[in-house]
Amino acid sequence: MSAHAISADDASDRVAVIAEKIRAGKTSLGIEFGSTRIKAVLIDDEYATIAAGDHAWENHLENGLWTYPLEEVWAGLQDAYASLAHDVLTAYGERLTRIGTMGFSAMMHGYLAFGADDGLLVPFRTWRNTNTHEAHERLSELFQYNIPERWSIAHLYQCVLDREQHVPRIAFLTTLAGYVHWKLTGRKVIGVGDASGMFPIDPRTHTWRRDLLSRFSALPEVSAQPWSIEDLLPTPLVAGQSAGNLTAQGARLLDPTGTLLPGVPLAPPEGDAGTGMVATNSVRVRTGNVSAGTSIFATVVLEHALGALHPEVDLVSTPAGDLAGMSHANNFTSDLNAWVKLFGQFAAAAGVTLDTGSLYGTLFRTAIGPDVDADAGGLLNYCFYSGEFLAGLEQGRPVFARGPESSMTLGNFMRAQLFGAFSPVKIGMDVMTKDEHVAVDSLVGHGGIFTTPHVAQKILAAAFDTPIKVMATAAEGGAWGMAVLADYLWHDDVSLAQYLDDRVFAGAESTVEVPDPADVAGFEAFFARFMNGLPIERAAVDAIGLEDR
Image (cartoon, rainbow, N blue to C red; front, side):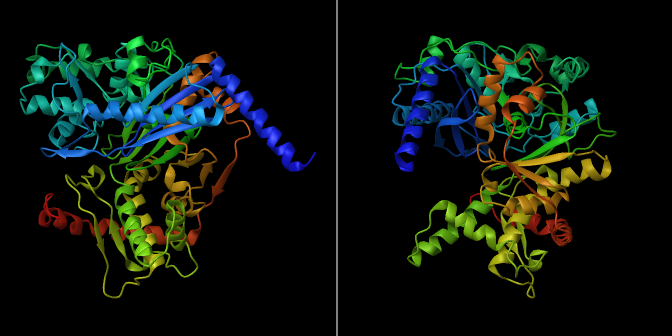
């Protein structure tokens, strides 16, 4: 028998094995609502991705606030799921009637407020909104705990301060992941990691800080409300706890064809920070990860609380409830993607057809080419599509700038793009590592930007001056991490960290980039120029209106 025939037989056997797993429900589904994509990933009991689906979407700026209509939430979820179900049918000849476990995750923070009739009171306000600066300052001072502008409690308190008409009618407050989970199961719960982006979590009890709930409730403008903050918030759950089951109505919401059977156990709904930790095996103390997408955050699991209040650092929880420090930047790939799209249009105009991977790979590789200047040749790029707290910006305007003697080459241009994209998150990371001396044993990068080998990994190593690991699952991201958390429902007899080490990542392939001293020096020079040049960005905000085209 030929090698080709053996290979074909092996492939046929693998399809048959997976088809049987699908029929037996030995699968876990993770769906994550990202900023630009809703992704669904189905894994088997060996943590291999066996099917996937996705749906592209974009936030909308309405009345000065970033939002996603709830109709688009459900249309996007159903499309992503239908795409995954079609993938299952095409690859394995099976209709997806049974799923072993499932879980939903989403971009954290924001504001979803519902009335007693379960109706949405105001349009969903996403993490991207920075209209909550007054609430951030007041609550951070009151709590002596950093309450970023993105956090749900900051949004709620700003609504109270602004005397918005809907405030007295609020009956329930949750995140996007918590909302989807509620509608699919009927349970108003939330994963402790996602919860930590709503209101501070006590790492000992894994629930809301009771002392801070009391301080908030005692504020005169809050005590005048007809509700109690404790009654508005969902119930936090740690990874491995049961978060309910898919109801018949929920099954129809997810799969309007009626093929999917109800009763599927659900994991606690998590935020994208938590699924990023899981996808990179970064839930142990002194481990960390960098999750890079439309926004970017660098998270390190802390040995102890920080010594001082730092507005640049969010204190959040792992899905197991341990304290972690996070540097979160609102802006990362939006401006970079716009420039890559422009180069793609040029290639098309020149009669050259490049697929997306080739286009990004070709451009990215120029940023680490032999003729590039370590500091990007004096070029400067600000990737601020929206406001950026870390940089003191209430609004953002993408800006590219250079001096007359700067070296304007393609390599330097792309290096400035990548350096500029990583610079905002470096602000908070420097606070942790340089000011608070937070120890980091390993730092793992994940997200689509790491798909091109070495480039973003090498530049991130220079930015943080620490080795950066990228795993084979780097491009899978949060949806895969959520599927793993769903599978953990079957293995909660061991700690989440042990489960990840011994089962999920045993023998996992990875690559490591060690920082190059020349790159580190070049990034530091660029970063100093970046910080000194921030008045350019502020002038752009003043000079260019949001409506200008």
